[in-house]
Length: 248
View (cartoon, rainbow, N blue to C red):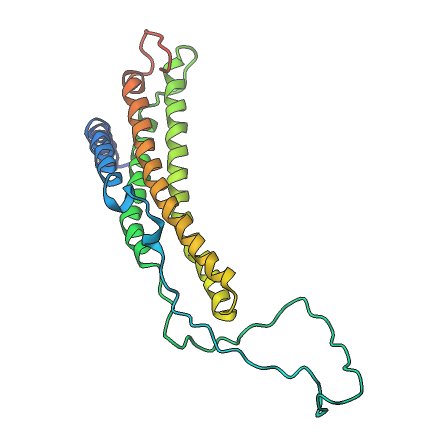
């Protein structure tokens, strides 16, 4: 392998280790304070469900009179009306277009999502950086004196869990829009059924609470990662020292 390539790889490792140590000592505390301040703002602190209620812009159509008799017979026909085959699926209104225009997304929730998504992305990036830092600190496999290595492995597993949870938060947001679209399409097809309209309201309120909870969980994950790394920093950097200490 060319020396230039080896040098570049080593420079990458050294740069990553430097960034990770700055992140642990400075970045994590700053992020915890930043998230606490965000949770204290009116967007997340008040949690008033009325603020996320929004009109669907789907009018209720006028009732349509339906003739209950088949053929050209009149209502005074002496013959009994033949029974129609029972159908489990009730047909709704054919949706060719919304009379008042498009059905908008929930604007207050979209504003919150614009704030929350970069926070989630940053947690994924920071977790990945921290994971690689610990991976580079793990020494070669040897017999005995592996207690410090086990601390590294336990911490690495915790970071991987945080990374997976943060990625799942993204999926939660996309599933909200998909679920809301399905319920709104039901409102468009059955505009006279209030339960579907209420289902949209309940879904918006649930997402409002979920977004607040996501920010709380991200703050908690930063706090727990910072705590476990700072407490075991010596063992993480030098896992094979002579001192035997517990994880906490």
